[in-house]
Image (cartoon, rainbow, N blue to C red; front, side, top):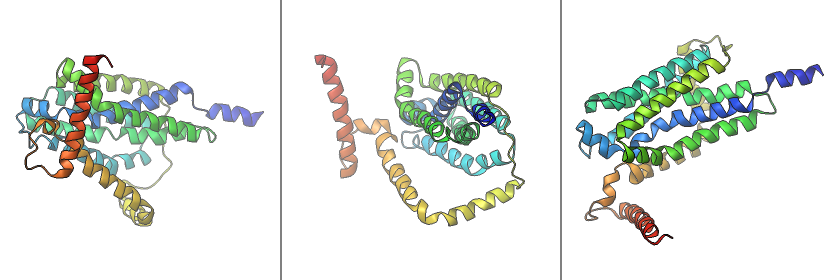
Length: 275
């Protein structure tokens, strides 16, 4: 009887799982909003079409830096406070992007958006901490599903909002959503104090040992990541490239453009015929 009571006390509620899944999705989506808006953003901030692609790169650089230097802090400091502070910084970065008067301000905001978006990678292990042992696999799967849905729907949602209003509305609305999330998480998340006695420098140095220890098993993942990153610029690095002439364009690029043009034409035909 006492064992059952302990299990019930350690169980995470469905509402908390839903909140964490939604939080991960809405937070990580900030990494991808700009990918379909680089043309509009470049025109507004004074970036050339050739240089506008750097927006996506800088956001991803910020995210990688956050994974390396911010996520390890969750092993040293109280997690709820770290989440709240990081989301507050993310809100400021999103507002700076929405009202950026020029390219340097927007690029700096993009870097900070990438840094702040690593909160999603703090919330996933937080979910495992809250879940009981028999719940853990299902809870992590649900939270990761929310994260992946955020990645999937970020670009079409950004395009829809920008077509209805302007691209600045995408970042302004995201700032409002993240502010609501910050309030909810600050109120509903319990405190979590890590038991680790290591110092920050020791944690950062230990990353090198972890990479060496798992290098062989991590190799397929690294190769897959490089493949995805190599193909992704063809798909969404420069939205205007789809409509440019195909002269002097490599065959691989032509295939991607033809497939995207075909998708557009099929969609237009279906709208016209009602099919």
